[in-house]
Length: 132
Image (cartoon, rainbow, N blue to C red; front, side, top):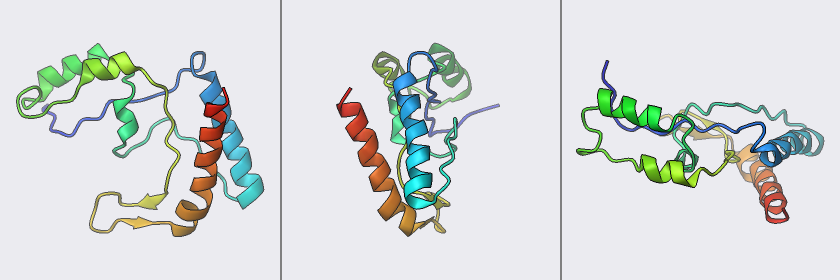
């Protein structure tokens, strides 16, 4: 088995350490339903590419060992700052636009969610984090 770039570290919230952010996700679900009639689904795994992967690595050294073993380009022509990511260890959630086929020729965006609902949810999240 060989891996090819890009690799983005798996990010996951910890129930004990990240309780504030998890509480915010509950609020976001409630707001989305009450204000917009939109059922917001919380996923513990984002199947796409996201910059939040550069904030935390759940697997840490285990992931880096696998990259060194199975990705011939790792540390040669493909670099990812795994140690810096482990040092950051920032809990994250991805509150943003919604669409299909990201980064493909058929990519499309759900305009109403992305321009009306997501900005409200993002603003709420920022306000909550700023006040804590």
